[in-house]
Image 1 (cartoon, rainbow, N blue to C red):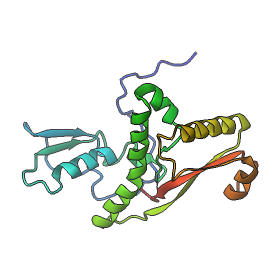
Image 2: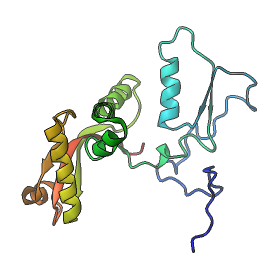
Image 3: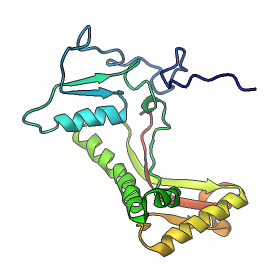
Image 4: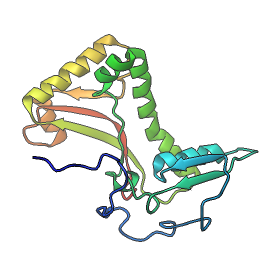
Length: 202
């Protein structure tokens, strides 16, 4: 029988240290004030990519910037952002059928386009703000080894392609006969390739 799990979704008291944030950083425990301010325009919860990006764009080129409090349970980027695989890897094809059922194909297509645009949006931001990181635009390879899974992915890809409503110009599907040769993965049954980015250490 499974033990009762905490359903409050609050941060656990004993988190595993993140590989990426193991070395102390200048802003790890930064506080701009000893206590919480009594008044602010905006409160942002979480100091990961989403929280920091929200603050950045609220303040960027804003002649009347709002006051912002950014709250974090522990250190800066101590949550999901500090525990990622160092990739900007959009889901440009596999979740489309699920989102199409939930929201319609047009909205699913917009979501795929939105995710794909982040590769170059992050690239532009890194360059503009001169952020010290190794950002490389590259190709992501999703390799499928299990035959049934590979067939399912192939059917999904062909269905989306036939529908013609989702832009798959950057997505390449390779079947079994060439998947192993192109990917270099033994017994590969299918391969999907698309533009992504690698950011070691983010």
